[in-house]
Length: 481
Image 1: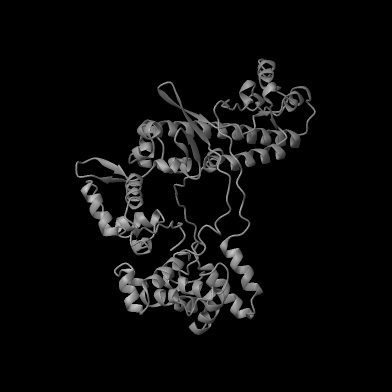
Image 2: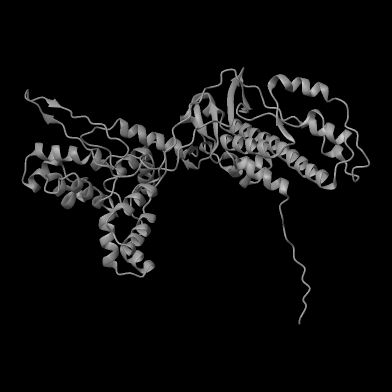
């Protein structure tokens, strides 16, 4: 036997700090659920109505006396007076009313798995199908190759291909495709248009649509301009992302944690405590401990534990509120032009900058901003919205990424439908404005805005019966081609 003596430096988080970080991460509705859960399990916590709050403070002005007989427990450390009450800020004036949104019952995965188990596949094929569905992203596309899946499952690629063909017949149409072309062909096939001109255009000429006019396409296909126009109109009704907007993560109501309002010439940040119960330590247990000296050690230990939990919870809620307000006040200070004049005046801002200003860790700023919302004079925004990288202009000025995306969006709105702006043309226009970004970045921003490439936005004006030009204008939904 060999004994080794080692010294090791280990960092651990105190339970109170863990609870504070956990509450800081929670959005408002989740916090309310946790508090109500604590109210139902901790007998020393109780909810205070507004009418009781003032009375509770005045009735508890005297200091709690400590009984030396109770195992020398300093109950004064646990039984406070008016400080036991968790106040919320009264902010009813001008506050918006939020309507709860319906929650989606199924995810795309659930929807596809249900169809898989109703199919006529055997057990091994269902196992393969389950793996395939697990590799389909939120847009409905398969993100793994047949060979990779066959290797992972230790089966022949032919078997995976057979099951994939079955999955591609599921709802929504076009799901399980590996690229846009395959998705469009699946949708056309399911609609019974396998022998149509639209099917031929997608199958043989999809990559040429940006380079060729409809007149050139009609000559190539040996058909009339009107027939090609009609086929293209039909193709535009198909979904480029078959599952987008239909099956997402369960929707949750958006209730802002913070409210920013202009009072006089200044912006004031409030914490939206309307949905949070007001808490205090139950005075009944205070009286019980002061008067009854015959409590067993088990009872005293139980009450001590629950008192600690109650105090930690109240402190964590207060710390969460003060941290969020402190961070938001600095954001307002840095983004004052946005709050005064609107989204076009959003400036580049990083979490590191705010973390340095408030003297906190970047991870804390991330917890404050993630999945939490703020009500502002410009509307309701996720707190994370105010953090964005910058793009340099030729004059040295910094422009936020969101402002650049807004410019791209405006340029596309004003384009001629007959000759839509390509990504290269957008790049050139931005360059004239002094905005220095790469062409591939323009494509990335356009995709993030859910705007289709120029070849799918193209509309051709044609002559009407009076030989005058009539512009055909269509709207393109974000999920359509």
